[in-house]
Image (cartoon, rainbow, N blue to C red; front, side, top):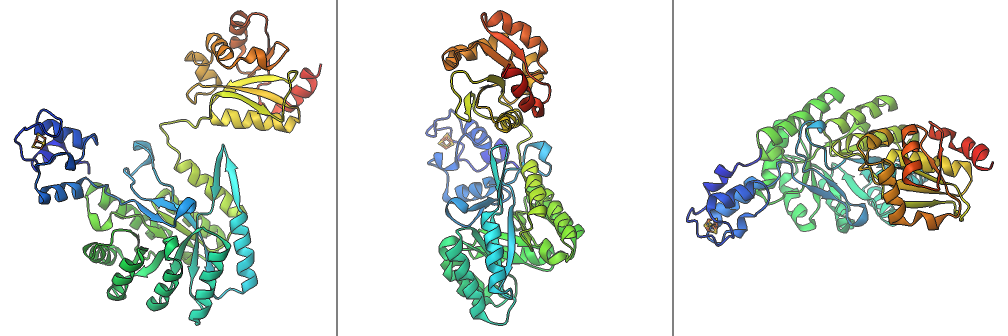
Length: 449
Ligand code: SF4
């Protein structure tokens, strides 16, 4: 719950001394409420009031980092129950399970698949984020060997799953620099776990039977000064997972209940043996509201739709995806190459550039900044009309890029053709195909003529 200016004012000295740079304490309080100032900017507030205020101002769902370096996964700090209210900020990590009961060859194959798997969608790389290493054999040495192997093979973020607390922290010590998530931390092993969590500075995977147990363990960890954790209420199926995740988020956002103000982890891999059911449960948990989702296998046919789904849910509905305004060179074009233009709506760019690549004919693709609007919407709003495109030509020196004077415009922009014939005198404006998929045929037949 956002703190109001009047609530903040109650903690301030109310002397209106102006030392914070604001004319009154009330003005300062209002600024803090909107994020424009910090409690420490007032030198006269008592230490206790400042600590209380900072605690109340901290995000209702804690930001948690698992892993380190370029592969670190950052989750939490979500602000809304529903994406359309604002946006979801930090997409959940997808983890793949590796068990120390699996044969070495099997683990090698899985690792190879996981490390090599990535897929680009409108300029964004979609990939698996974490490896979840599970101790299922009855030999501690096998588990430690698995952790060592993974450390040597990849720098991905790690989840360590082991019910033997001593072994769990021995494994964590091997990879503490990688800041793994250690699971499970519960009422049963809390006493032994707290000093090791503090010493190694790793993330606690809190596990309990139901929300009460989870909240109790999280509270105990908070009291011990441990703040980086993720929560698991041990649901028995997809419905319970969605229910508990929703209750956890609602408690944190709507009630300001701090012990549940952390990201969650979901284990579809343990809920269902059937792969399709497992992936459906994973999709449900991505929607509501897991911070990490653990899957059993790196099956690309199931991973791909799941990653695209996550990408869609976690794209910002307030902003269309865009690409940079400039002239893109595709396939090393020369001064006789075709010249095309479209908007900077990311989907337009990737579809058109993909079609040009498919045509196998080097070309220039002019991308005009339309603030992410597509062809017709940007034409009606004046961002992709004759005048705007003529301005683009001047700004990027298009006349010097090609020696011919032919510009291919999107087939949907028939009216634009007339405008450009006026605004770009001397240029032949060619209406391209309606569908980008027809660009290869169009270039082969029309351009070569
Ligand atoms: S420095 Fe503190 S006491 Fe002085 S005006 Fe600002 S908020 Fe009020």
